Length: 111
Image 1 (tube, helix red, strand yellow):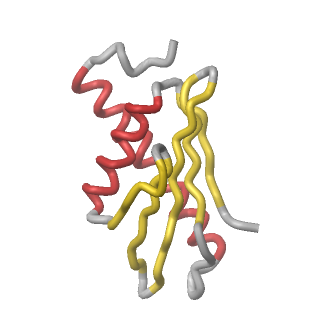
Image 2 (spheres, rainbow, N blue to C red; image 1 turned 180 degrees about the vertical axis):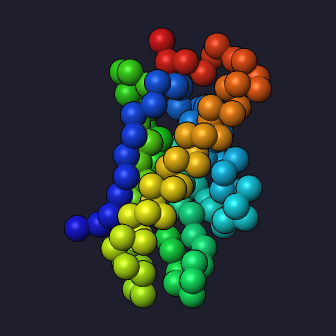
């Protein structure tokens, strides 16, 4: 059972992805696109290699953001892994809200 966190956001996919990229750059995390809307992010945390898959899938109500572990993080407790995933998700959502507040854009809201 792979670890993951998921949240439905009432925003269009392009804004969610922009926020994902913004956070990854801010954190200095190596990333690449496996396919459109599916990002692979990798870094070392406390001597452990962390590899995540981040997907933003367009839904009727907005965008479903999913962050999942691509492989087990040996040496990290399940709690720490779960906390890392949740922190990443929260950080992306905060970044997204910051973009929306500073730019005051209406294009971001899913219709």
